[in-house]
Image 1: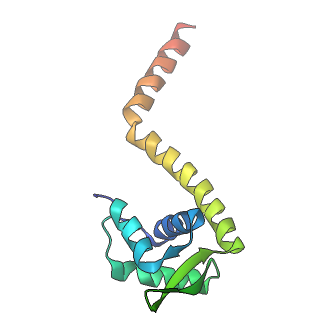
Image 2 (image 1 turned 90 degrees about the horizontal axis):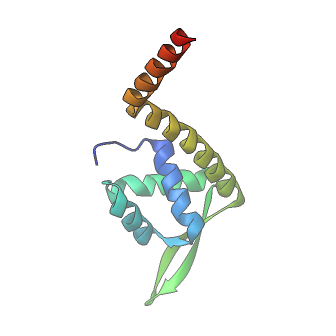
Length: 118
């Protein structure tokens, strides 16, 4: 992928996945990596940061004689995710507008022409 994820966007992606279902660390990293080219070593600090900010909490669950650490979103995490979603939609709309600037210029030209005709 051409575009890099910054920390807040990566946080939003992780919270979005965990909001859907509790996730084991490895599974969570694989889900993110399916969509974004990012290393596992990048994601574990994100998980720790989100946990420190109390957006995620962990619990251990036995699996084949070993414990797996699962991540669950907290109420504060759900609120942060709602904020991220709102911010994303505004940001996406602005970027879409810039990327489609030729349409804007074309429409502006038509409006200017119509104003001149009146």
